[in-house]
Image: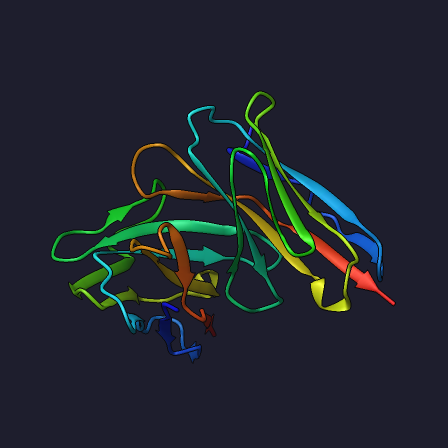
Amino acid sequence: GAVVSQHPSRVICKSGTSVKIECRSLDFQATTMFWYRQFPKKSLMLMATSNEGSKATYEQGVEKDKFLINHASLTLSTLTVTSAHPEDSSFYICSARVLREGLSGELFFGEGSRLTVL
Amino acid sequence: RKEVEQDPGPFNVPEGATVAFNCTYSNSASQSFFWYRQDCRKEPKLLMSVYSSGNEDGRFTAQLNRASQYISLLIRDSKLSDSATYLCVVKQAAGNKLTFGGGTRVLVKP
């Protein structure tokens, strides 16, 4: 089946630094990927939709200058948390939808990246 | 009112018992519905899609009630491994956006 890989799975950084998270579709091309954030015991909150070759679409309340998204190829999207602060500590998950016969509409998630900002 | 609402639980279920829970959605134009399972500190994984006529996959049965705008998930003969958080996911008619419910936590105990 389709697989989405996310890296790193865990990162600890100092306040003020920037952190990049990669999301790769391993056996399919994804023109669209989604970035979610999840707080403990809460549901996933869509942050932005990453579009290959064009600007990402951000959800209301999500700062685009804070969370930089780049989708330069059909298999890779990156999320960069710039000037991270402790309140940015969270579980970030990417996903992509496979639109082909037999797997139409299914959303595959990366393994998630747990960010801790000290 | 939230777009997608779920009872957070936890539902404490004896092993072998049946448990069922619902998810309500506010947008009547919602098009597609899914149940995802999320284990602690892991990514969500698709459990099953929900079809208009209802569908079953082994011990799991999903139902859609468009008139009352809710979907349900029933788990029969619960196993210890069914312990997880079950996320209701709704897709609107237009666009790719999926909206997640807050999840229902299920704990199956011996």
